[in-house]
Image (cartoon, rainbow, N blue to C red; front, top):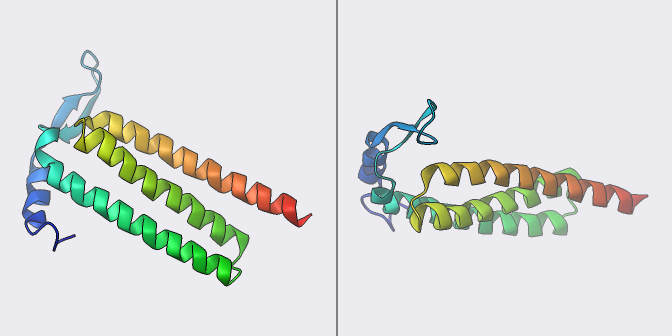
Amino acid sequence: MFIIHPNLIDQIGNFFNDFKLVNVAGQSNIMLPAPASVALHVDVYSAAFQFSIAWGVFLVAMLVVRFALNSPTRKKAENISDIIFWFGAAYLNQTWLINNAEWFEFWVMIVILLGVSLIVRAAYLAAAGSMRR
């Protein structure tokens, strides 16, 4: 990432220095930290997007190895869940941060993605358990 984005360390510093408390729903009293200008940090989001893709590809390779070596079902389920999360995070990063600069919507979708990845893990474990019977 640091080769592709040579100023990434400075950009990450600028990103964190840009945080301030923001009203979540405009009229509410709920204040959460967010960058003052979400759209100014596209390079940081791009680096996170590229990392998510690279890590997802690595996890796919690991899953292939797990199936080849007949790893325990629990480990395969964990790997599948992680793949769903990292590729999903890359998609959400591209959709909500890079293209639309929507900070809070991105984090809501990440929480939903965590739930989906856990459901996928449970479904795989249930399906694998029913196949053994």
